[in-house]
Length: 345
Image 1: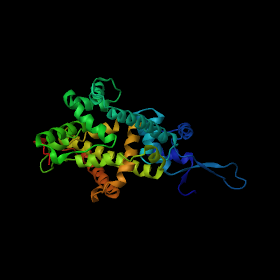
Image 2: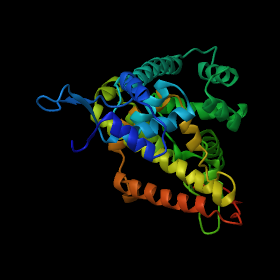
Image 3: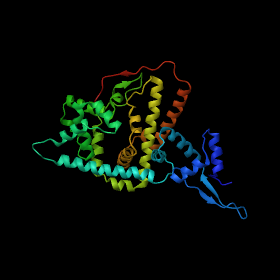
Image 4: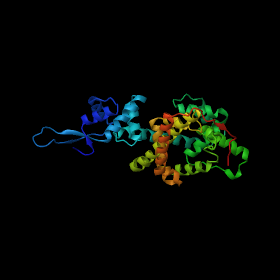
């Protein structure tokens, strides 16, 4: 017996008990691809022949996860990234490459935005020209296309102006000097662009809307952190990246489970939880950029008790139990989703 270690035969037997069809050939291929941990080799004892390969016991769970992920997309890079997001051991290339791409996108994009905002030409409006071209551009990102559709051409420049100034670290909310009408319109535009309109307006029974406040102070704080943000330095801090990754995946998982519960209870995904599916559809490089930004923002944000990692894990566990119960015994009658006039405190 080798405590905590399994032979390839034992892995196959464990997977069979879990109704996962897996061959030794597949395991060998995934090992070569770096999608499962490399085995250690141990001798069988004097006079008993060659050594045997022993895998960590977690390999069974990891292969089960690979089986599910391959059902979503048969691509090793996708599977490797998703495994890394879940905290499994994979070859470094599966997570380092997306961060390398994200770093390059950040460098080029931020540099271009700074040059646009530094342009003091009197005969042109470079910000307006950029936002107009982006609204009409053909882009691969379904996330960006949906954002444009939600906002519309008329409000697109106002939304991107906020996003651009946050990205280059100069955003200020100017709240004290604003008239209520202008403030409400701007927050309405931000809600639409960020996919939060339903989170502000929808409710069910005693369950209130998820958002009822003006969050631009938060955006201003994020912008001030980004102003000092060194992407390349952040990527080098592997421990911090791993903590940020765990936070990111935990929150996305909570969103996903909440969205599934919403679908069962009211027959649709409400409360702005569609943002969960949009986060899932981001590319690996886009998700890497979010994780890297969070690695800088997370330690600087004062968290309430419910947003501490251990409590988020508890919330996820409770949602998991509730979701399993609802799937086993779905309600006969759906709850009625209501909409209220948005509040901008």
